[in-house]
Structures are given as structure tokens and as C-alpha cells.
Length: 226
Image (cartoon, rainbow, N blue to C red; front, side, top):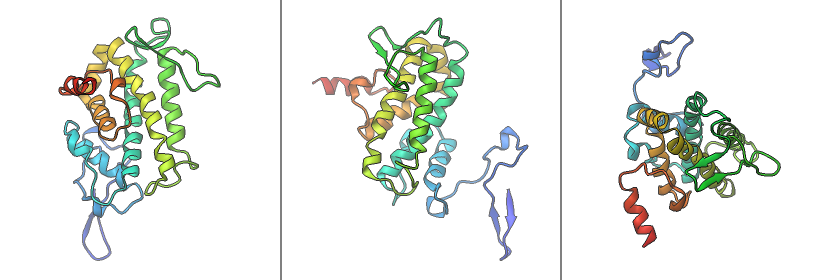
């Protein structure tokens, strides 16, 4: 949508109005990062790159010049959690407490839910909801993240634990709901992007990256074992 400015020039209004059709959603031209005049510019830049080509993970994970690394990691993790809600919605159709009474990934991994006063076992779908709710509470906390343009190192250090917990949603979906996982992954490349992200910024141990989603992951695992 374009609107007239006071000087007679046209400006692109990047806003989805009520009633916008699906094919017109976010259907505007790309904007250079330095022209994004907003405290949400980093989020806007990331989402723009995803819309442009969600399969181009390298471009999506490459920060523009001048962005603090802590802010870049924080905004990406926010975006991952938002997109993981889509996977959670799909899981609700078949991940029932009767069939998935524990949050597992293969027979070797059983995860305890940290949302309770004392961590305990939860049905997988409840674990998923609790984990995403907990991540949202932390990432929207004014105590730890009062700013979207500058983040304290002590707050950045909390991102690793969030990554470890939300990754378990990928692993459960992969090992126990493979068809559903593959459908969502083909639409988003979300697990691929997340795995590249946590590897690039050392937010998770490679030993915990149990979903073999990347073509070069076996080679990476072999190097770590050596």
C-alpha cells in the first residue's frame, strides 16, 4: 500500500489491514535495514528475509552491519518460538496424552518439564505448551529484556537454556510424528535453521542435536567424536 507524503513523494505503508487477502499478506517491497526506523527493526529484517526465501538459511542468519550479537540471537530465538507455535498446533492433531504420555525422543531420551515447582514428567503435548509459554514469559520479561536494541550479557546467557528446551519439541516431533514433522519442515525449514543457528552461536552442545536434519551433520558429529 502506498500513501502520499507531505512533500508529494509516495511511501510504502507496511501494514496488513483488516480484511487483507492471504495472497496480499505482507506483499510489499523489501526495505534496507538502515531504512527501518523502528526499535523492532531487527525482527522486521529477520522476518523479511524469511518471507523472501525461507530455504536460504545462510542469508537469514547473516546479521546486518551494526547489530549487536546479543540482540541478533535474542530476536532469532523469539522468531523461532513464534514459528514453533505452528508446529505445536499441528502436533495437537495426533500427539495425545494417551499415546505420548511422556516427552520423549527415541527410547533413550525422556525430558522433565521445568514449568512445575519441581521438574516432573508431562505428556508431550503439555510439555510443548509449557515450554513455549515459559520461553515467551522469559523473552518478554522486562526484568531481563527491557530493550530490543541493547541486551545485557547476563540476559543473553539465558538464551542457551531456552534453546535446549525448545529443541526437544523438534526431537519429539521427528522421532514420534515423522510425517507431520516432515510436512512442517518442508514448509518452513525451521529445524534446519534452528540447528544452524545454535551451532553457529554455540548455544547447544552438538551431542544434544539428535535430529539428523543437516546434510553435513554426520560429518560434524564425526569431527566432534574425534
